[in-house]
Length: 116
Image (cartoon, rainbow, N blue to C red; front, side):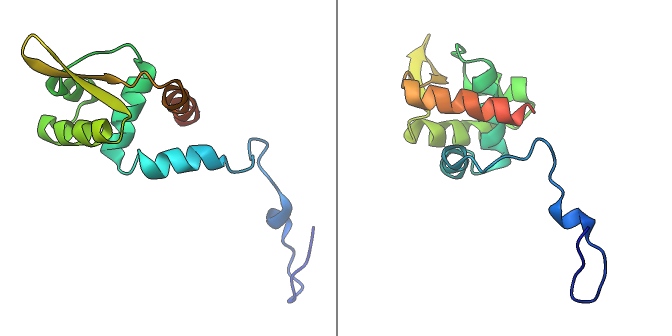
């Protein structure tokens, strides 16, 4: 145990949780760029857990339990950022993960950290 200037014992200052690690700068950059809100966080987690999904905003909103209009807006944002792709199927817009291997890998790393 250590003591501060007042002579108080401060054993807590030097303890580290066994799971403490250095900050993953790449993961932090990913979060700051793509997971900028809780809804986007949920959408990214959904696609990370279901990487082969091709679905509409309405169905995705249903699966994650969120407002369809808000989900549609954030899906559009994530598509503009290149994380998701928009395509048409049967006259509807469907969303799916980018085919970019680096981004897909970042999504899977993000989801593995979220699941801890």
